[in-house]
Length: 351
Image (cartoon, rainbow, N blue to C red; front, side, top):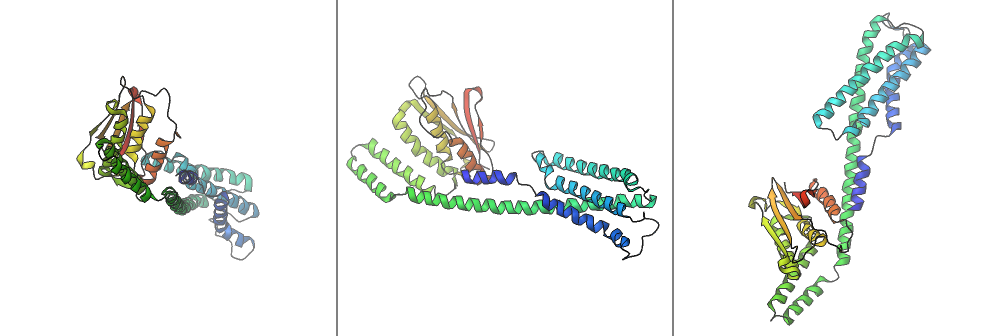
């Protein structure tokens, strides 16, 4: 999962290369100034009196300004506007339209202002009106090309992400094979142990629950999502083992809407959260641990009162972070974590 999330992080910060945008801007400029270039070399007749006469200064200034105009619009619509991609869709769209109009008007008026001062010749009044239309068409073309480039990049990113997920899936399968050192041997050993203690009902029940847990965990390498009902059944077996150790010092309460039982959740998600509560909180006669699992507005909520252990058990400390990454990879949603009012609460979306 670490490999996948690193890849996704890289993809979300990918931009269209500047040399690509500059090449497109240069092509647009060449096409727009080509008629005047042909006039300079006498290949075609001069334009009508409604247009300013072509000259070297005129062509050079128009070419550079068309390039700048095209490049700025391409850069904004292909790259820059994604810096505020977290805005709401309406606000994002309105901001994009306003900035595009501002760029269009600012650069166009600056062109009309600088033209007579740098070229040394006033632009024919009839051509000034046409210039507004020409720059408007160029703006539309640049925006359209930028959207195509962004779409192609997004498609490429999605293919790379899918390939990364496939590679991670293969790695998980390989890891599962490495970890499954003949599971039948373990099951047979548990059955043998159960036969040895068959007169001890508690020991026999414990072994059977442990065998079920192990079988379920092995299946987790084959299934990413399970129904909430299946996950709760597994969780109850896990709770049985916890209560064997802590007895009345640990309790769990369920209050779940039955309509959610067929919804899918990542396998072992609930077990990890209960295990997290057991691992990080004090469990004693004076301060028993109580975990509540209930449904609320399409979410499964797991909560407990915070009483930190004096000595924390060993672990990587990445359990919740890894669950969040796995949840997003499978359901495209993040888990919600809060610890207000001394209550640690995790919410899992099941929709």
